[in-house]
Length: 361
Image (cartoon, rainbow, N blue to C red):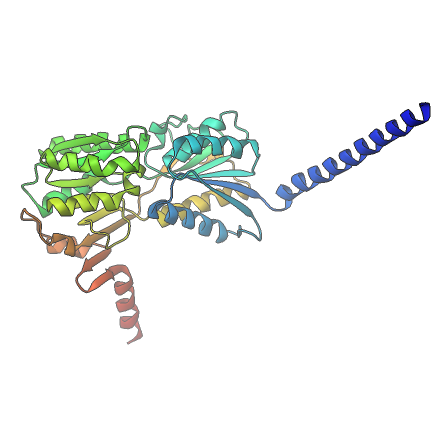
């Protein structure tokens, strides 16, 4: 009996030693990897063209500064697919995973990770955020360096005032504009509040309808048309942007235009999109993350507002409008991209080609 007990005890000891060896070797792999190759966790709130472009820009910005995914850095990408609760769960997992840096693309992703990371375990860099101040994560409006020591990024408040000015240049008698928006999005609330101020100054009535998810956008937009909207506006709302095709469909059925501050696919049917180049904002965000990975102190970097303008005008959207909208020549000259019956014309590319042809003569 004593012999059997000794053998059992020996077996337990050997199992414990083997388990310890495996744990230590695994720990060695976990701790060694981040020292030689940084690991980044990247959270994107939804799959939209704009957020996809911003994320692509961030990865390119990292690569151009020496951090190439799969070679000199490991980037693990997460997507909440438009679900806030899913985003919050992913954020907690990302913080507990102890990445070298957390990168968030969109206001909702900024909030999710910042709230999960309030202990400051990991440095977080954010981009594609309308107004970082209203996100409620401790960022000051008047002091760009007054932000959590582990949190820094780029705000991009889209040009609401300019968009409504362009709309009235196209239709001076514009009196009622409809907007659907999700109150759960702090970024959307900021844009709608700005739009209320702009519309009041311009003598426009802003008709509003709330949505909880993208499936409810079509019904909300129909209700705005029923209330007399002469145009539909898409602000910086991710929920509505995901369903932009539904907004365009409602506009076509009602023979009224749709305009936005969130440029998407150039020929999707909106009359104009006056916003920002999300790829470039993403690229600047990636460059900022690179600075920190190279050793910069995020506490010494100010939160900035960057809005590289991207202006798309679609002349084909004028067809069958029930009111007299027109596109002044000045607006066509200002546009980066013009869509007409012949196709999509990127004026930036055309201008560059003309300059190169002229210089070669």
